[in-house]
Length: 572
Image 1 (cartoon, rainbow, N blue to C red):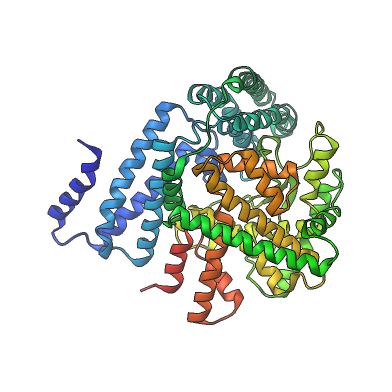
Image 2: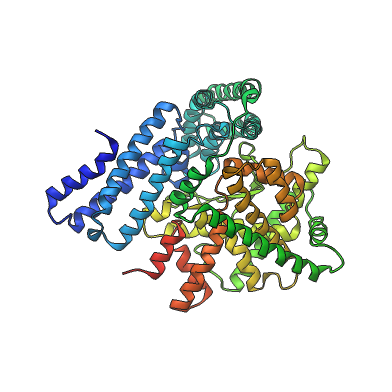
């Protein structure tokens, strides 16, 4: 039977069986089953994500991205979509909250199918297979959600599956762009040391004298290290010479990605126009702010002078640790948002397997994690083999005023605080479906919002740093679209980051290269703009304080902002 006919057949059967439609109880039961089925398959397919979310039935399993498993995943996604479409025709029988969640879930399923059935972006990226082993083991080590001996057993099981990850990569990846292969090599090289040093040291402690468990681990770890070294050799000698492919997904798929992932249906020309307009506006504001600091210099010169004030390579992680509490105290003192917990994030170096061009990130426990509360604010350090110039350019991204904005973004009131809210969110869908324009939009919105609320009153350099961070995201907005829908090269994209967004050449290249594997990283600016629009509408209609709006926003979880608006302003 043709797949396209199945939803119509389902509708026909439903109509025959129920006449005027499903009862509320029947519709709700089918929707609840759809939600459970979707997440069960999602985490069976990506068990590392399941563990991160707090579902520990997946602890011993590792991702299987073989063509056969992907085909099964696609088949299950299509069946779930059929159910979602059929349920949507019964929307009068569903409660309003379920309708919102159904809309979010259907869009996500369509996005998953776009990725795994049509684009194949992740399957064709060697970075996918370089990241899985380290991340898959690390997620078991760093949080005490179970006794160390139990986690060691799961880690050993995952280590045994690592050769299969690389085998899938060799079978799936054909002619990637050179940028992806270069990063995959960097990530896998870090994984070797991670397995040999960090994981081995942890296992000795976790075994607690159990020689059989330790020997079992040692054999699996030795196999994983050998498989990783073989993968590195394959990347270097076999894949790199044929890494001549294009990263561009094209206008059609780009538009479909932002439609299904972010629920944004604007034409790309209009979207690019908004990005360019925001880039211009923030650029003009940066020039004006720089004049307040030093009217004798250009904005670029003022920015460069500001970036000289940065930590040393050895003091980078301690400097970030020292900086955090002052940012938190400001947010609390201004009563900008409620804090569900007094816990703090732990600042650590970005794990070697995850050093793919980012400068900082936040790894928080999932909303269904009941035991382990550790959150990690990762900061990417310099590498021993870097030149002095590259080290200096990297550290400039952590200049004191810029670091303050990074703290806002990653912790207060950004990612860390939003993660603290997630266990309070009412439904499973809103707890687990994280949309980038919501999550990254909120963190980026926080940067501008705290400055507007007085964070930069005593240091105009912080206002300039906020604008520099806004320009960085504006450049991601326009470069991302152009990389995937025009003939723009990474080098040309990097030029825009240097000339219009005040990035150093090394950091600009990292940023532009990221756009090749993160096509829609426009979501920072796009999400921020949507949140400002929603805030204006919310306060106009309902009144109240900024804190009340922020709390109301965070209480809705990570679904697309379009749906957050419905929840806040259109509930029936």
